[in-house]
Length: 375
Image 1 (cartoon, helix red, strand yellow):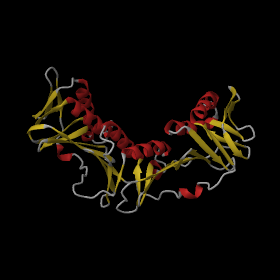
Image 2 (cartoon, helix red, strand yellow; image 1 turned 45 degrees about the vertical axis):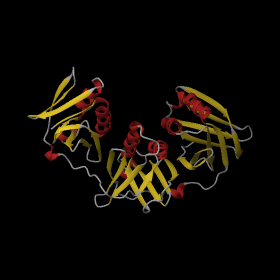
Image 3 (cartoon, rainbow, N blue to C red; image 1 turned 180 degrees about the vertical axis):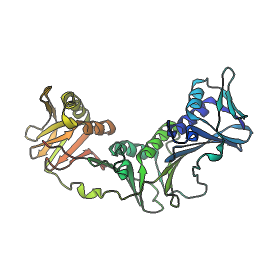
Image 4 (cartoon, rainbow, N blue to C red; image 1 turned 90 degrees about the vertical axis):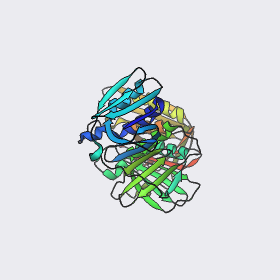
């Protein structure tokens, strides 16, 4: 195998595929990226057996071939060399990467045992989604998915596809985020998918890094016979297994009304939270109390810890309904503020023991629920 390409292109795509390489895999070959030089292109593949990435880069291929190379060291080397022509040659179990003033040799592993990462050719996508909608949905939803495997279905994002409506839902048992978008072309069929949150985060990274025209869409393909999904964006495919299992029926826990509503500026709310969290971070469960006072149009945030002290921060807003005290995890509130845009946040509550509903004022396509803590 022998090919030449530009350093900036090579580095860009190595950075993308190497992100899914597991630093401590059970199989040594999974430390590597699979290279296949053929027909004027170099095909790069990496996988951790749950998520795989396929991509293609244009290159001057002098000799076709196929081999696997250590991902971490190769990526670091290519990122460190100047932006110039890079020559890659495979000979006698070693890959040599060289430029005018730099060269490195990497031990290889034969490609025969590298896991197959599926690709598609003539299949039609189930749906097409814009870059903006995808990035917004992942940012607003992914943080609410569970980070442990106690309940595997909660480590995924549920994608509900129906006509021109696509909803992204994530929950960890104590909070829930849902973002609905409208696509221009109606989906080929209605379907519900449960995709690992990591796969969508990697997709969001690729979309952000690729810098393609805003008109370029993300295509979604379903490989039903393999229980896998493929997201294609430009020259990059992200392949992910689908999570098996029954997703909780979340709709029944979303309140349909409220007794107290508060609208406040997001930046003021976030700043008040940071001040109150100075004490709240020492409280069991990171508990913070919100005192909603419609009479004074104020929201007061407070925290108290017997061995540290207490504090209170007040912000003004537009409130209606009944006065109410409700407690939330300051960490959950912080996660929400860090991942939402919009200038004003809307909070709706019914009782101190029922979920608080957070929305972005003027945006009916997003909803976030946080379960309250005991006062």
